[in-house]
Length: 355
Ligand SMILES: O=C(O)CCC(=O)C(=O)O
Ligand SMILES: [Fe+2]
Image 1 (cartoon, helix red, strand yellow):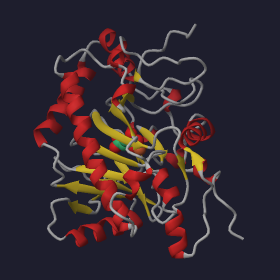
Image 2 (image 1 turned 90 degrees about the vertical axis):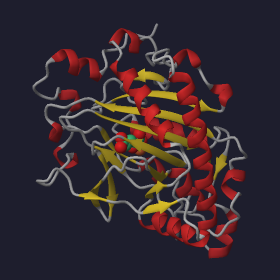
Image 3 (image 1 turned 135 degrees about the vertical axis):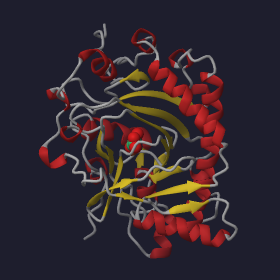
């Protein structure tokens, strides 16, 4: 029998009258956020205008952003702005529901696996390990046949239609971005979409960061790279996202109506390390924050390795061993994330000695 889950962090914050951050949530001194006096050194990531008239220029901008940042923002991306704000609204309403209602779709451990879908706070992290200052709602949204609607909130009533539309649009945009990334690597536009054989999965993850009494001793989401291929992130107006650039943490300035895009570990492997999945993290503040991620990933049985055509052209040897995505995920969660989400050790296991 699975044990009764603990209350989520939001519940603890709303009913616990916390003046300090409980021990579970403390992070080591070296991993704490150091904000400058004005709150944060905010930078603008490279901005890609998806409606840019010069296709070649857009492709070149994508190449530069992927090589130099692993992250960029997109504007004029074709996703309806009202749909984006309606989506933010239905998730806000979900997190405003009474705890009993949220808890109806609580993520529970099934068999010997860690909780992976539904509402909860320690996905992929064993109970005994230190926690992030956040709760989340996580749903498998593509393929449609994999949707577990019993884990989708019933309230607000418009939740399902809104989220289905949003996921569809996010998937289309991801597909367009995959085409641009393919081209930026000198491949046919359809290359990456074909590699994933039209069977990509999409996981929707809404991160809710409750207000924090001591933001400088904890972390909303510890540093990590994303284990999938391409992530779209829709954040609200509160700062929190930090990206590692030239060994420094830089804070991303949120811009309404834009998406943040980043390449994950699968693109790093496929491109033989030319595009890197960059570490990022989220800090918290006295204000609540919400971010909505859609992770696009290969189907579980897809074997991902450096693309032979790229190796041939660059006369390179493969830097990574090919691996089935399901196996990669397991090592991501069990070898790295579950112990203490940190950096990119999970990718290091696949490196091939170059001498
Ligand atoms: O909340 C954020 O800005 C970051 C979210 C994130 O990195 C993730 O969900 O993987
Ligand atoms: Fe992430």
